[in-house]
Image (cartoon, rainbow, N blue to C red; front, side):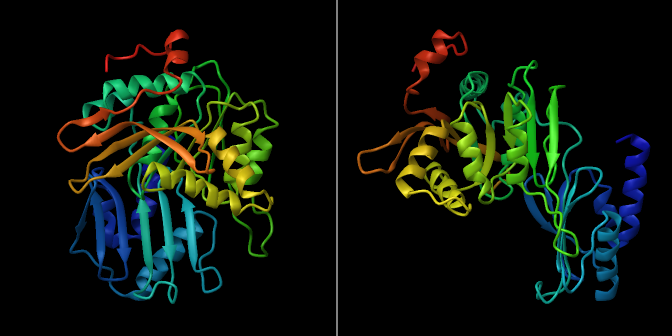
Length: 354
């Protein structure tokens, strides 16, 4: 998008949301949350702040929400009270109407920085250490499957975008997302985005549809912005069928929660698999889990790097915590990766002394 079109977009959006126009113009604000007419919050540098701004009345806020929907070619009304869409500048907007939203119309706008967050920047702010960055680079180049996990707003997508920079330039990458957020540096990247059903419930394109299509498009890498449902099974099966080096994110709090969350998502698919077989596939597919968290001071950091080592004799996931974040020491190495020798012998990793 050109600077001129971005400026026109900003002016148009500001006209729809005139009471919060100053917030839209502030580049330091990463999220704007309108919880009804008189309660407007922002997120700045990872912290929530309440503003003194407000809309004149409920009809004005409702009109603004409908204008946004019309602007992105969608409809939000009593029959379709939830709108989740991407604005042309990459920002994500979510609108929820009453009575679903009990306090009145809710609008949330998540904005993304114009510049990609790099691994170098993550090192500068202390989100990860040089040792962990080198290890993750070796994993990505060495085609280990990596899952980035964390809670809402913990920096999963930003970290995934940064890790994608390690993918070799000569590879063909397919990026699949619900709402396009990732911005890869590699030239040979194909971006695909889901599409909701129309007013008659027709024409929906899901992540599962995109995954199946991507497997017929000669991918070297498949990057799924986020696994939220049954598409997790398709991704797991792709990971175990010759498409190594896949990257994705999932909502989970700890590494053990991550594999269990993936299991739950796989069970949401329409494919009936015995639980033991499903666990075996997940344990074989997921090589490395990178856990992120947002701390009370607003900072976002990697808290764990874990390796999935299969299943134990009882059929439970066997995870090894390789690095763990500690309050005063940062990321501390706690165990050696089982495939460390492979990475070292391939010249991908120069292992630091433990």
